[in-house]
Image (tube, rainbow, N blue to C red):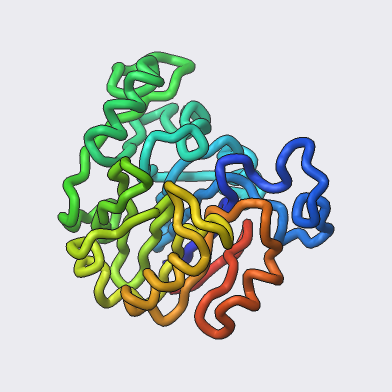
Length: 251
């Protein structure tokens, strides 16, 4: 399986509009972050997790010409605002999207013309599919297990694919979810900044969670503009690296 980081930034993106801080002024391309999203490729099939504001630009950058499904972690706009651009993949057949019941309910209210609304020329034709927590399902050859995690007071999904897991927008992981993550070797984990935050792991909290999970290698994602790429890489050398837009991992 090939994993491509389409975006690794938090809800503002990096650089932040109107900000002249060190990171926003950086000339290092690793410090330019679109909203968080990841693409997985297995054989000729591709799945994406989340479709943020720059979804179209991300797919153009990676020269993606086909897509087979989208998994949603939750319904915050930085993770779903690009949903309408799925229309190009539903010209001939309905296009499947997946998530928990609440997320899909919210998306249907927000995009009633696009989801479970029949075949309408010129509009997205998306079919919603509810995934149960902790229940492994096979989607186009991908074995996917939804892992519930807390994002503040909201229960959202991370996703496990065998020895790989993707958890973004995390502030708390239950014992049950830690158990469900045993055996993960490669972990992409949300880590907003150095300081604590009410709805996201800080760097140190993410590090502690990764150690408890027992992953061999960790990449931080969903990063804000307070710490540059190179400084993050100096925090936990040999174990944690900062993900960056366009990073490709072979699993």
